[in-house]
Length: 193
Image (cartoon, rainbow, N blue to C red; front, side):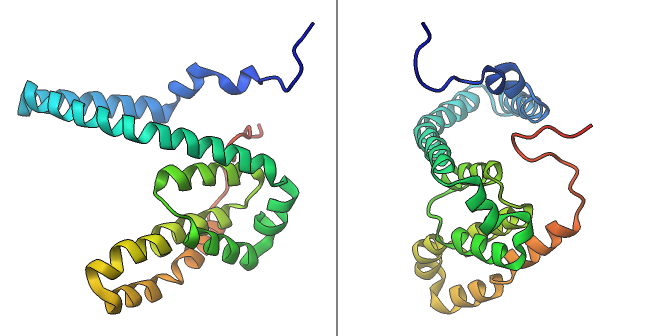
């Protein structure tokens, strides 16, 4: 008798494919080269200090990243693909870009929150232009960073000038993304042969 409930698609959890894709191999090679250079140029003590610091950062970031990924996956199940496609799909044009820009402005936190949201949005059917607008908006117009960092550190005048100058950037980035070829498959899709 099989247990009730959804089954896990074992193909989507191909650990060898996930751990040893091209980007991961490049990161492993870069890490090994940087570690060897640190050991050779700065010595064992500097290498161990760096490793200890990196391990502490990993332990701080990992729980947040795991929660962000789970939250993004749950949000993806809560919001239908038709809803996302209707408001943020490839055919929504300026409306989708404007909505994605607004969502990017109000998304709190760092990349541990925003990039799982981007992955969930991409898999849910968000268009490329809207995804680019979201990321550009989050990076340049994030309300939380403006209030927490810019206003206190550089003052209202410079912060307002920088923010006003950055408002067109998500729209420009989205427009540029629509002009570039779309060869790469979306996350979770196979490239057609």
